[in-house]
Image (cartoon, rainbow, N blue to C red; front, side):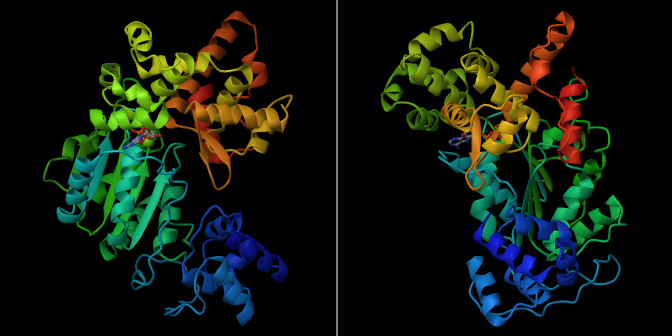
Length: 477
Ligand SMILES: Nc1ncnc2c1ncn2[C@@H]1O[C@H](COP(=O)(O)OP(=O)(O)OP(=O)(O)O)[C@@H](O)[C@H]1O
Ligand SMILES: [Mg+2]
């Protein structure tokens, strides 16, 4: 919870309005009001706060405290006229005049230590700001640094855009849902007509992309693509994403959509070109000197002095995630001896999967169970929520120690604000595969250990997460 969400909730409760009533009165989408009261969206615009304040009939003193909770001045410098409540319509009103910059970064990961990538950033900025490339796919293998690079890029050029919208497709949200969130931002939170088809929503989005300079980023795009022999095809039910990408590449506008992905969908592969509106940027590993900085940052500085350190970077072709994991392993398990690692790497650590498997084998039973639960949960969870997943919950202190240890091993990530934990994408994929293998072998041998302790579907999760759990775990198992 943030100060703003606390203050807003206090006023809402005092008014006696439900979140839905407040949303209707303020002319703001209900989902957005819900996000604001839960603290899962921040930085509402002054315009949004003014709408909320007037719906809640706050007096001047109260209004001031609501603005201050959002760290905004009161009265706001130049407040645009607040439009009356109405649904967005396609044919009727044009998008509102440009007012106040508002972005939606959702649960973008923290950009911690970031090394190198100067050339990549320079070229990508040129593509977007000078060449006005409309659709850009940053592609590359797991852990190569697509997400981090894109965060840096988007943060750097943020000021050039009226709106920035970031979403991860990791849990394959439906396109309807995604467009609802995006249109909510671009329309200053006007409620969306629930009867609109996906095509209508796409058209409306394109209207905004023509009118405003929007930077849209969809991370982990491969999550909506099929596996194995169906390279570049969309999951069943997700084909409309293909239409969206197609339109964004084809129709002329002043915005840009960036995708990060391990795989390129077919229509992008076919239509991309060096000077086309659709481009693909294949990302490779870090330069050796920047790889060294990762070793330095994660492990011990003296590791980086040797020829072995360079050989290690070579072995992983500068893949930053692999380097991080190997560095921590060498530091903790091999007393910093890289050459021992390199000798064995020829047989054991040939791939990043090898590193992950080695890491996993070294975990305590509780740590392994946490890893499995985080893979099933699929979104960031707090220690208390995680504790409730266990049939016989471990005490919070033990859980805290295990979580801290997993963090140190670079296996889990924390979202500082909510103190919620999740798995990095490559690790999520690896643990999922491991869990499925284990369940299949338990089914074959009829000895149910993991199956007794881990429900592969969780009853209370949101619909699209439920679907992601079903697809990832039950279908293959
Ligand atoms: N330029 C960089 N400097 C320092 N560390 C980096 C850099 N790029 C990536 N990393 C590290 O490598 C990890 C993996 O990077 P990132 O999440 O960007 O990979 P990705 O290509 O998006 O992987 P995935 O396909 O799994 O989504 C990050 O968590 C970060 O710790
Ligand atoms: Mg990523």
